[in-house]
Image 1 (cartoon, rainbow, N blue to C red):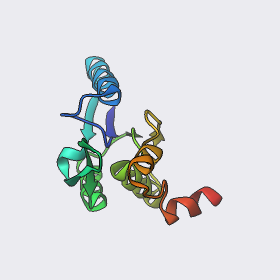
Image 2: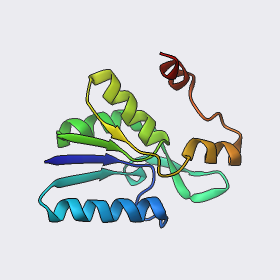
Image 3: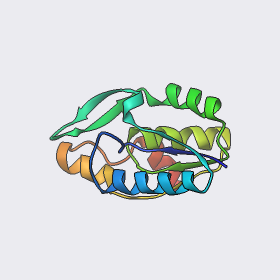
Image 4: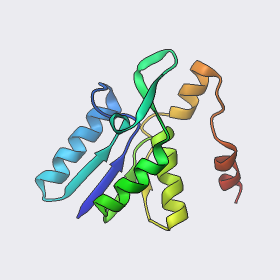
Length: 130
């Protein structure tokens, strides 16, 4: 199976999300799956205010669309709710791709507490109301 994971937390970050994903990817590869992880290193990014080790991807959607087409995954998992996770979710909803997602960290609330940025885009708030 070809499995794509998108995450706003990935190497070279060192935190619980990255350790969990690294171990999960290793285990999946050991049983024969082909796994790709799209993390912030593939995008132009800016440091998260007050937590510069976390990079926030800029303009993720076009790159993610190309990577989804290139990799042609059988399964898509969204690991975080930051810019990469939100862009992946939007692409999947628009294109009708099934996906799974998990909260490893309350990323929107974390960024809000540090920056006062809203926890959800107006688009995401509308989707929740459907």
